[in-house]
Image (cartoon, rainbow, N blue to C red; front, side, top):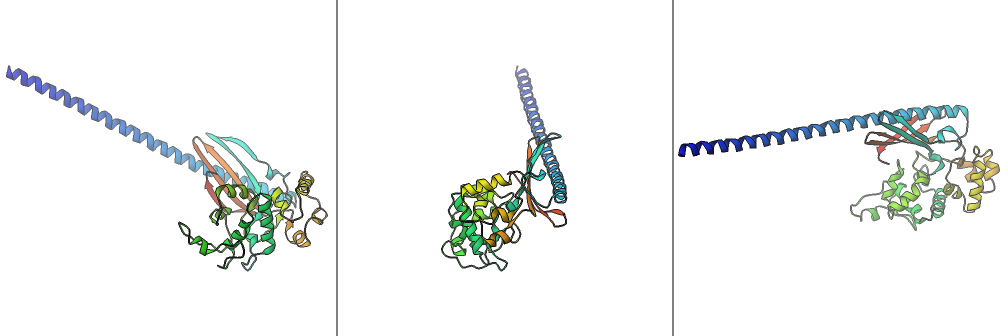
Length: 311
C-alpha cells in the first residue's frame, strides 16, 4: 500500500510540475509576443515620422517654387496672391498634408526695437506700445522687451528689466541682450504669461535686422500701431481698400495718416520673409514643421530657420 501511495504522490508532483512549466512557457511566449508587437509599433512610428518629415520638406520645396514664381509675376505682395491661400488637406498614403504661408513682414518685428548699434529705437518702442494698447495688453511690455534685447545691462526707465530682475527668479537666468531669433523667447520676459503671449504672437515676428512693414498684409492691430492718430475706423477703411489686391499708392493712402519718417522708412508693399506652417499626418503620427523662408532680390528663396513640433 505504501508503494502505491508513493507512486500516486510522484505522479501528482509531476503533473503539478508540468502544469507550472506550461504556465511559465505561456507567460514567456506572451511576453515575447508583446515585446515583439511593441518593437513593430515603435518601428512603424519611427518610419511614419521620417516619412512625414520628408513630406513636410517636399511641401516646403513646393512653396519655395510658388514664392519664386510670385516674384516674377509681381513686384508687390498682398493677400490676394496664390501664396496667401491656405493649403487644403491633400491626401497622401496613410494620411494627409495641409498648411499655410504667412507674410512675417505684416507683423511688428521685435528686433526693430533696437538700432544698428544695439540701442533702443524710440520710434519703434512707441509703435510697440501702441500695438500693445490696441490689443488691450499692458504697454509696459514694450520697455521690458526692449531691455531684453538691447546691448546694455542697465534697466531703462520706467519699464525696463535686466539681470537684476531675472537673476532673482527661480530658476534664475539672464537677459540675452541680443536680437531674437524666435518670438517664443519673449515668453521669458518679466511678467509675460501664456494668455498674453498667445494674444500677442500673431502680430509680432523676430526677423534679422531692422525690417519694414508690408501694409498690404499687416494685421489690423499693426496698421493701427503705425500712428497714434489712426482710429479703428481708419483701419477698417484701409482693410477695405487693400482687399482687391493691395494698395496702389502708399503715399496717397498713408500720407495723411502717418509721419513722413514712417511713410518713407517703414512702410513697404513687398516682402522678404515668409513663414510656412505645414502639418503632416500619417496613421497616428502628426508632424508640424515651421519654416522661415527668406526671398532674395533675384528671386532666390531659402529656409533660414526650421522647427519641428506639435503646434
